[in-house]
Amino acid sequence: MPEEERPPQRRDKVRLRQPALPDGDVLTLLATAPITGFGLHPLGSNHVFVVKLESEAVGEPFYGIYKPQAGERPLRDFPRGTLYRRECAAYELSVALGWPSIPPTVVREGPHGVGSVQLFIDADPYANFFTMREKELSTFEAVAAFDLLANNADRKAGACLKDPAGRVWAIDQGLTFNPYALQRTVMWEFCGEPIAKRLIADMERVRPQLDRKSRLGCRLAELLVEGELEALCERAERITAKPIFPLLDPNYNVPWPLV
Image (tube, rainbow, N blue to C red; front, side, top):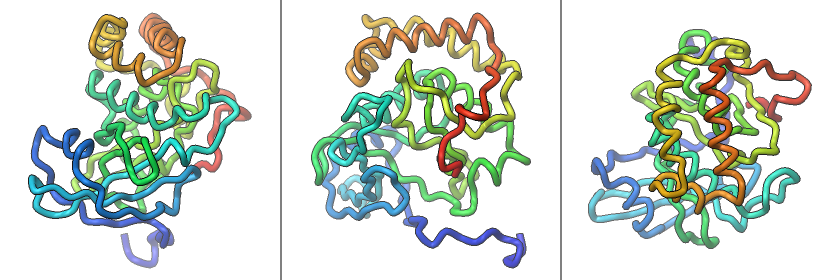
């Protein structure tokens, strides 16, 4: 795109070079590598920090997004102090499903106490759902389906990132899994459309794993509050029985701000 046609760049976007990490060790590195520096991320509604981590296994600093429990703003429709755990629960569920791409996320201690630490994605500052949907809408069906299953109450356009390789990542999963919160999304293109069979097949495959006796179900039960795992199971059954994206209300089912 010619320079004069590019939308103005957000000067408060954080751009950091993220080195390649050893395959299979990302979660361990995020959970155990010492945090040697941190700074407040300018775009978070809660207290969000970019942290620098260092490990001999990597050989150079790498970065994460740290969301401490202590920095969570109280919300009317979410139990206090639970958002960081929901970030991790969303990642665990996405791994089981195989979609969407959510950056590796762990719960650990940080400079401001316990919180979630998620791998930092070096993303194109011009890209978000609104700029990508015309040419890449099909890429977002998995994100929309995941948000329906997890009952995401805050899918903003800016919570979709594109890395230098062109991979689309879904971030900001803190407002998920609460059965009483309204789903809020900017992905209205899918309303009333059938959900892809491959996505439904994955939900059907994962549904038995949500039992509290399974590894995934046990882990999600640890991260969520009472009744939310059961509500997730009920949503999975309801979606697979009627695999159509619901028609949402433009007066209620939209996040703010949109980006």
